[in-house]
Length: 134
Image 1 (cartoon, helix red, strand yellow):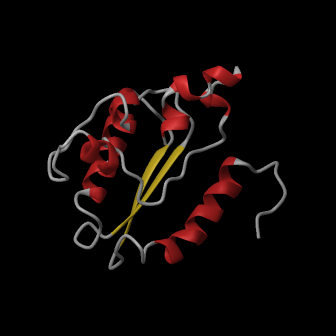
Image 2: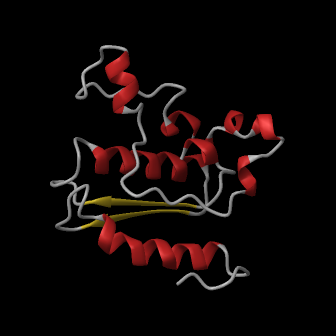
């Protein structure tokens, strides 16, 4: 998500993230990552949104975005909710192509298998001119 939302990551390569056809994280961390919070001595239960978080870089002109998570009651700590917040803030910013899918009954690891067909469908949607993904 950071490569597609935070323009500074591709800048050294003279690229702009808007060249990305679409962003499709599977149970992506939208707030400041657990690792960064651990490094700073911040509890996993303390939500932080700083420059290292995708939510910090909400913008209306970002590439299309498909957010897929497991069931909010089975996912990692707050993972569905942070993705829902990202979805809402992208909508509020005027982003026209952002979707949120919650895979009912699946946890963080289990959501991948039912999420793959959704990901493939999304790739075909955002890259229709590319060869078929099998």
